[in-house]
Length: 381
Image (cartoon, rainbow, N blue to C red; front, side):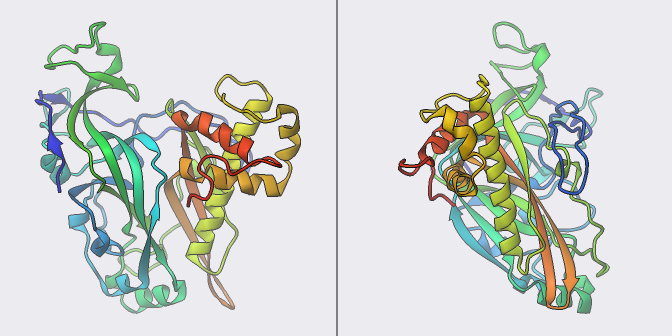
């Protein structure tokens, strides 16, 4: 199912994605604090717009993705022998609104009706992206329940694994797709951009024109997960990315990193990493409230008592449950390790709290205090 088309497209300029940059001061468990760097405008490297949108893409989960290809869509994936070890579950996404950037393959761009992407010299583009504003409704999340069996499969049949597989699908409703037409600094006071028909919208440092829209929930994007193997059957080199030590900076919200211990299953490791990221969100929101930061408002509890509550594990866990539906996992890195009892997994997650959810998160902290009912979002996955 492809969403309805409302916009008349003009010739678009290429959005050249800058090289990765880092921001936000974060101290990893095993390393020193890192000096903040400037914000970058680029989509996550593992999140892609789908080629064909529908309401049940589960058949693609666990399919392996080709090596050496940057812009992917689900049609490029292949079901292999080791795909049978990948299971999945459907969970709610909390109805939170997002405004994000996504990688777009040539095929997906054509199916969305995007105009040709041109560079400043007029040559074809090397990198494409889309901006999508949507309300998150559900997601399908995969899991390798038996890492030892998966490892054995890849060892015995190296051609039946690659370094990445289709690991998650994102469902959204009331969405709008945008394509880039220039830099924000080039937009005139009347909202027009030279050479572009119609008004444009400024966001993420770029000028965007609206493309297609949709209303009903549909799975429109997917995430590529690291398998820990390459097509030669060798354990892939650990490469979580610089975000582990220094979360990127965004004008749209705040990034946080969660890291688990080595645990006997991938699902437990993911849960532990996500819990730590959510607790980091709680601590940041709480510290913003207690220090009087103007970024966070709407807290109705006792500010004086909040500093003490932030030191209590029971409060952190309750508040983390309250903000669960507001915090989105954007990137994952899994680190397998052998042990006498089998394969263990450490998970690292890059999580994001949109600025639009700051007030709701403050309300979740107020709801987690003694004598309070469940805060907004409590009980969400």
